[in-house]
Length: 274
Image 1: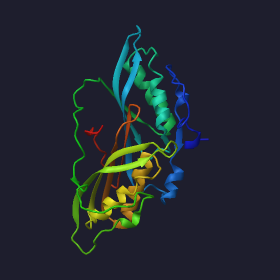
Image 2: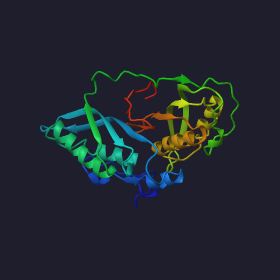
Image 3: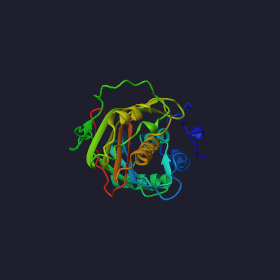
Image 4: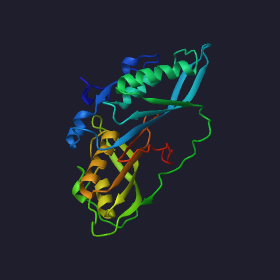
């Protein structure tokens, strides 16, 4: 069964060092989307951006090669790929001789697209390639608000309000206080989140309380971002909305989900915490 409980998470694992696509463990998005009221056409567009910092293989003569990898999984794909299985799969290349970068790229594209159920984009770069300077999410931080907080979960969407009597604004709000937990192991996932919208002004104190209420919540990264998107849309009713979370890495992988009412797709701005 493709449920988190049947994944490699939380289990003693032998780390294979040879290629094995069967290590990839897809988990259907459907059940968690139905939980937040998304059962028909998706109310958003989006992408899940994964960055791998520990990808290595052997060239045809047996010399190790290292690279950074960016993977983009479309939000409309029926499955997410469970992160530990993704790490195990990538580690499997460590003692595998590959004819060249093009051959590796073709293998990654084939296997990851099959697991996700939709075409996955893959970009490989040299570890010292330019363009990896840190750039934190743009926007105005709400973390300095002087508020008292005592609610750390489950997420409280009723904290979210917007003042429809005020003129429409366009603003980008960010917080580095997002934390949730793996639904199987309970390990904490730390992240920063950017909320960009056009609409009635969102109450910032309520938004901060809402984000902090994920602190003891058990859900995968992609599911948390979709929950935030749906809750803000339902309670604040913006004309336009984008939610982008940048999570810190675990096991050489970071996951960065983006959901939006618009057509634009985000860059991949590696934050200082990443």
